[in-house]
Amino acid sequence: MSEQQTQAWLDELCAALPAGALLGRESFRGQHSLLVDPGLLVSVMKLLKDRGGFRYLADLTALDRLPREPRFLLVYHLWNHAERRLIRVKTEARGEPPTVLSVTALWTTANWHERECYDLFGVEFRGHPDLRRILTADGWVGHPLRKDYPTMGPPEVQNWVPPRYAPPAPAATPAGDEGAAS
Amino acid sequence: MADLEKDLHTEHMVINMGPSHPVTHGTVKFLVTLDGENIVDMKVDIGYLHRGFEKMCENGTWQQVIPYTDRLNYVSPLINNVGYALAVEKLIGIEVPERCQYLRVIASELSRISDHLTNVAAGGLELGAFTAFLYFVEARELVWDLIEMLCGARVTVNYVRIGGLKNDLPQGFQDKTRAVFKEVRRLWSDVDKLLTKNRVFIDRVRDVGDISAEEAIAYGFTGPCLRACGVPYDVRKAQPYLVYDRMDFEIPIGETGDNFDKYLVRMEEIQQSMKIVEQALSRLPDGPINLDLPQYRMQPKEDIYHRIDSLIFHFKTVIDGIKPPPGEVYLAVEGTNGELGFYLVSDGSGKPYKCRVRPPCFALTAAMPRLMKGRLIADIVPTFDMINMIGGECDR
Image (cartoon, rainbow over all chains, first blue to last red; front, top):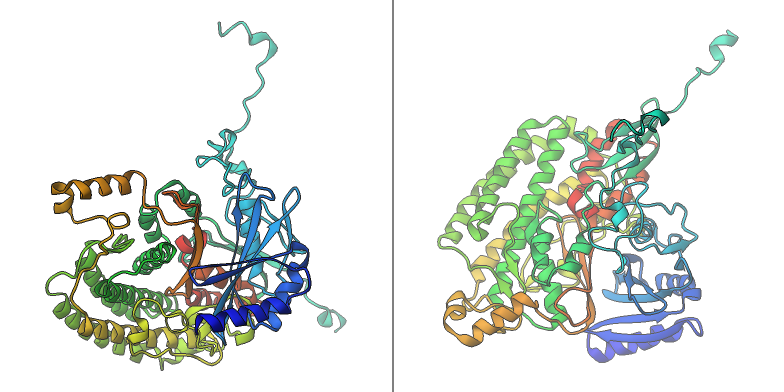
């Protein structure tokens, strides 16, 4: 595929998107990204899947852009089997906690990818059927892949043990024994 | 009579399989709700091997990530090495010399052979075919001998470098490969006779774990599991990297996507991979294996000791790390379980801003409940084996 053909195809694809959905376009090393409006994410994705032929969601992840606002950028990689094309779709997660719409209704595989994103970045997906932590242990505190999360974990989790293995709290000292130790 | 017609008072039973169970090769837990022997519901609990791969990468330089990639899919570490190095090279915008590309193809295919051998061997073992296991583990041992000859290690190879390779082919590698492949082919045909037409094996795997092509794509299937459904998607053909477009090989596909088809696809891929290695060895061009760009690839040791400019570049690349321009790339290679993608983001510094891995078996493992609902508990064994979940890759 020549460069011109690819550009023509990309122009056509962008023209087909709903009005106001496309916020930006970028190309780097022969790969193309579209920045879309988070409110129209699901309709853009549906269009890409049904009319653009992108039936396979290869990857879904978030990018922490601290200290920029909005902080999190969601990155989707879609693949078209028939035309052998890859496209990257990005959208911003706005609000606190950062929230985007879920695409699980379009691709089943998004279910676990979104759970992972929620677990590691703390991005919430509206419309996700089962948003729970997936990789870190139950009861984990914080979201490890955020840029402001220390590599060794925040002080309160550095000696973290799962709740069921936690040592029992020390028994309260009887009132009369206070002077005995000294 | 009325008493007999009443239903027996039964209730569902929830059992845990794993995190440490002979069926679960890696460390994974299944929460299975059973009605007798039938699976009513299933939940998969992963993350036991999560060690923060991405976080570690963000704290090291670009070169320091390579040993971590060995630990992703530890049954075929060379492919992870190659995939990561290719992604960084694409980010920088460089291409390695031709000899290096051929050697990387050879390394990847040797890894693929060893992974498929392990998978089929373990599958046979779990269904009671211990002989097939012994034969294929012997074959894998021979392939690992080749890998050890190539890079000095058997499992954690750390062979590929950004912009080149650790070392060239050792002497006598071609002859040794010929001898090993002869033996692997003999063992392959023995196992083929033992399993492919074996009634006991077929009864356990045929029509179990089947899925339609449409649904498999929606679940994000790639690799042998997708090809078993009849979709000829192979990254080596769809987005050719290295010199795969010059190689003559076929993509085996199945029909129904059941475990038997997955098994057959893997068996055939072992043959195709051996074909690729032989072609690559026969066409191997002469020339350097490393790029002559000291800001990305270290110069030879003698130059570093004897030339001041090489020493300066060496110091800069070790202390600061190499510096790809700001940007982002997604590069996929064909791992043994499917599409192994690397999404790298650079901010122009010596450390990766983001180093995301798209593990193929993450998507496959997520489909376990779909494949297993309504089946028997014994069907978990072959299905999970053919999914070939690798903990190190799935949990990262």
